[in-house]
Length: 203
Image (cartoon, rainbow, N blue to C red; front, side):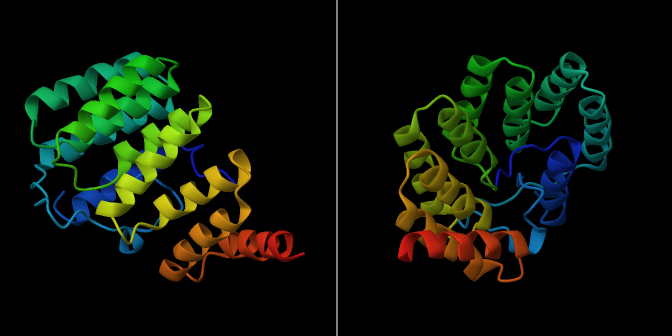
């Protein structure tokens, strides 16, 4: 029930969403049409060169060449300072390569820019805190993000996972899954979670 074990497909969809809207969304289970945007932030135009460079980053990630991927993303940040979503991608790579403190710093820096078009940085950082056992910090991040991206399926879904699997708040988890279901009623996996959790809550 975890929508975080992703690699290049995860980031590829993230960047594809960003490109499609002239601006990152992190879940391979979230289709671009189902991903909410920050209504207060105007997405930047992405140069074709940045798109091409990001494809190289994805290839490096696929090969688990973390250091080379980090270096290239850092270079891209310097070249394209308005693409704040790159901070979220770099934070994700730090996390995957075991540099958790660097990941937290980078993701928090992304959040602090206040120019995020997509919810990636919040989602990644909440997952890191969750894995560290800092459940209340994780919950607070999800709630803050949902105050901005009110129609973001993956945020509701991951908050539900936090409640169900980590905090044993089953009724709250069910409510979050149902919010996600209202955005995407065709998600068979999500519908299965709801059916199973309904039985547990109402037994």
